[in-house]
Amino acid sequence: MSAPTTTTTELRDDFRPAFHYAAQDTWLNDPNGLIFHDGLYHLYYQNNPLNSVWGNMSWGHATSTDLLNWTEHPVAIRFDEHEDIFSGSIVFDRHNTSGFGTAEQPPLVALYTSAYKLASALHGTQAQSLAYSLDGGYSWRKHAQNPVLTRNTPNFRDPKVFWYQGQNESYWVMVTVEALEYRVLLHKSADLLNWTELSSFGPANATGGIWECPDLFAMPVDGDPENLKWVLTVNLNPGGPNNGSAGQYFVGDFDGTTFVSHSTVTEGMGDGTREHDYQWLDWGRDYYAAVSFSDAPDDRRLMIGWMNNWDYANQIPTAPWRSPMSLARELTLRTVDGQPRLIQQVAFGSGAEPEPVSTFTLPAREIPEGTEVLDGAAGTVQRIEFSLAPDSAGEAGVVVRGNGTEGTRIGIDAQRGMLFVDRRESGATDFHESFASLDVAPLRSLDGSYELVIHVDRCSVEVFAQAGLLTMTQLVFPSAASRELSLFAAGGTATINNLTVTTYA
Ligand code: FRU
Image (tube, rainbow, N blue to C red):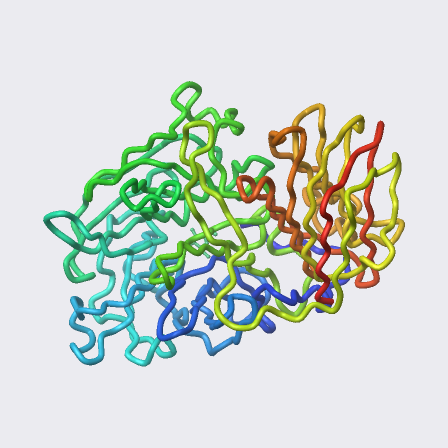
C-alpha cells in the first residue's frame, strides 16, 4: 500500500461506474464476506468509513439482486481503537454449530482478520476473529472471546471459510495465508470457534509478492459431477503478470486434509520469471483480492475482485469515492490441452437485464489499414463482442472510449500471439508514474481467429477472450466526452466478424 502523493490530475465523480459497485463517498478495497442469503447477494468490503484513501479498515456493506445494481448499507463491522477489521468471509451457520443463534434462527457468521493496533495487548499480530448477525447480515456483534485462531504472527490473515462435506466426516474449513511465507494454511472446526490445523500449501508458482486473500472450492470438470477438482486461488502483491497486484490459481485435489496441486510449475519455482506458465485469474492490472460467494444459487461459483492495483490504488482520480469492484464472474472448469482450466463469464443475478439505449451490428468485413470510427456505435457503457482474424495485419482490434486524441486500444498482436490493452493514451494517466501501460497476455487463435467480449464502463474495460479462457481487467480514466468506438489494423488488413455493440449509456 503506497502513501497518497499529490497529483495534478483532477478528481472526478463522473468516473462512477454504471454497473460496478463503488461506495458512495468513501474508500474500498477487497471484497469480503460475499454470500447469497435470503434472495440477496451481499457484498461486504474493506472500507475506510472516514476517508477515500486506505485506513480505519472496516467492513462496508452493499446488496444486490442482479449483481449489477447495488444498494449501499451502513458499515457492518467497524474499526475501533484496538483493531482494524481486515478481510474475511461469511458463512450461513444453518445448523447453528456455533451456538450464536437458535435452531429456528441460525446465524450468519463472519470470520475476519483482527489487525491489532497499538492500544491492543496483541499489537504486532494478526489473528482470525468472529462476529455474528441474527438479522440477515445488517447488524453484527463481535464474539467476546476473540480471536478464535491466532499463531501470534504478524501477517496471518484473510480467512475464507466453507463447509466441507466429507465421505466420513464433515466440518468447517478455514483457508488463510501466512502472507510473507507464500503459504496457504488450512484449519478445521466443528463449531467455527475451535480450530485445528490440517495442512499448508506453498510456496508454489508465483511468489513475486506476498500471498493474500485465498479461496478453495470444488467444481465439476466439463460439467461432469463425477469428476470434481478443487481450485485454490491466491492473490499476490506485487508479482502479477503485468506488474503489481494479481491473482493466480491452482487446480488439484483436496481430501479434507491436504490440497495437492496439479498445476504447480516446479522448474524455476519461486524466481518469479515463469509468468506464462502459471495460471492467472486475470492478466490485467486491476483485478485483485478476488474471492467467491458462499451459497450462490444453483451451485454457481461466482467471484468478484477489487478493480484496482496497490501500485497506485490510493491515487486513482475518482472522488468522493475511490475504487470500484469488478463485475461478478461465473467460474467453470473446462479441459483445455488436457488440463482443467478456469473459464470466466460475466454473471448476472436475477432481475431484468438492463435496457440498452442502442444496439449496433456489423456483418463480416475487412478492417482496412488505419483507424476507422464506427458511426452509430458510440457510448461510455457498452458490451462489445466480435471475432477477429488478423489476416495480414500485425495488430488489429478496437479503440474504446475514444475522441480522436485519446482512447484505449484493445487488440491482437498476431506475430507475438498476444492480446493487448494499451491504456497509455486512455485519458488521465499522470496521477501515478506506473499507471500508463501497454499490458499483454499470451493468447492462441482458434483457426486463425480470436473472440473477444469487452465490457466498458465509465472507468474500466474488462476483456473476456476466447470464450472466457483468458481475461484482462484494466482501469481507464477517459474524459466523459470520449465515446467513440473505432476499428484499427496496422501493417496490413484484418477481418472482423459478428460485431455486436450493446450500448447502455
Ligand atoms: C489485500 C489486503 C488483505 C488485507 C486487506 C487490508 O488487498 O492487504 O490481505 O486483509 O487488504 O485492507
